[in-house]
Length: 172
Image 1 (cartoon, helix red, strand yellow):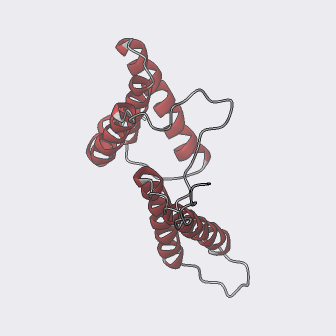
Image 2 (cartoon, rainbow, N blue to C red):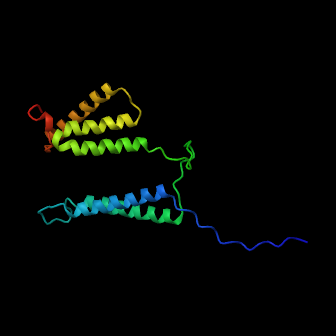
Image 3 (cartoon, rainbow, N blue to C red):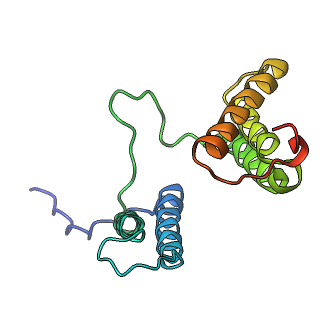
């Protein structure tokens, strides 16, 4: 005599991946901020295609992508590494490198106005190099300052933008 087969239970709902949900919501927030920023672009001409068109397209696209990612994540879908990646998706994330980059970006942003564009962005470049494992601080400082200086010259002289000179006022 065969054993009775238990009735099929409803499929268990897959759990929501918190990192995937945070990324999806971050994309939604970025899209919303892009749309808000786009509304603040002023232009004086009555044209169908003005300076708002392309930022509007990017903002709408980013917002839609974020909403789709959020819906898929809430449905239980999860970002999986490619077959060729040698990664364990269940391993805890090491957030030290992104934290160093974020810290350098925030500190550089705060110091941008008082110390100037070159010093602020050099600090940001330095933090990225440090986060990626470079430990030769003298070389990192030199390269960061040169790249920031070239960026400053290209933006101010080449594009005619006004950036804060800060400590280097009168020298640049």
